[in-house]
Length: 141
Image (cartoon, rainbow, N blue to C red):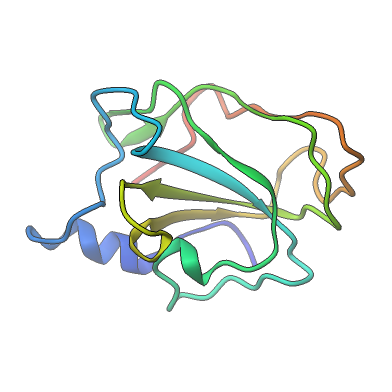
């Protein structure tokens, strides 16, 4: 699968009453914000029908918050992410999601990436993994 924005997140953007869709977080709150998870693409398969973080299987390591998440014009950007002491079977892709204070059945998935990522796929060995985004931003609409 090539990189893709989850269609159900885009649909939520068009609905005024849908909650938990904003990427532009005004404050740093560990219960809320945009996070990234690493996934084993041998086990996890992207699907247009997936919507919430609970749909993901084979998460590798602990999800990490994207600091200084901003929306400028049509581009979403944020800080480099550090995953520490990562173990697991295989990392082949990344999933960005919008976390809130509720259960993971309410955390909207935003972006799936498995193509054009330097160093992936890889087998984690217990060390740190740094994810650096493009200087122009993580993605745009």
